[in-house]
Image (cartoon, rainbow, N blue to C red; front, side, top):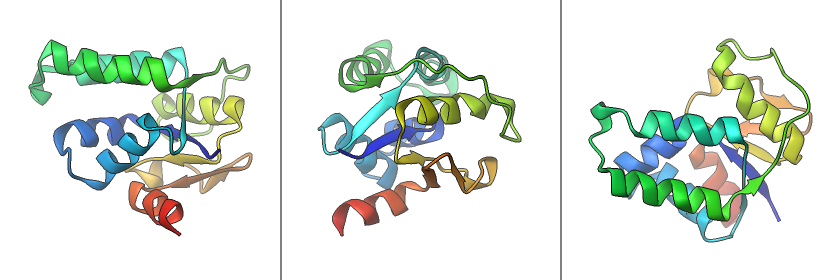
Length: 134
């Protein structure tokens, strides 16, 4: 099964636009078409960001999304602390990808990441959908 890591911007986009491409990728992960990989650090970031008042989502909506991630995710524990990304906060996604041996890291900000990392390709949500439908 294809293993993916979702950058927080994909989760936020899915929440804000339920018909958009990031939402489609997220739903495929929750439905088991691909395996969503997650760590405690990533989960904590999802939670912190999704609860920000500017996104105007109820506690129930955020709790439901986080529950789905918690229940459907493949939880991994990174062993290496990386310092690869321009934004240090993004290193947690590469750490997860490395620990999970993920096939893809899906992000809306390709420029924040290397093209690939130890066998994990860094791609957009559109690219992920294209891979899954071919």
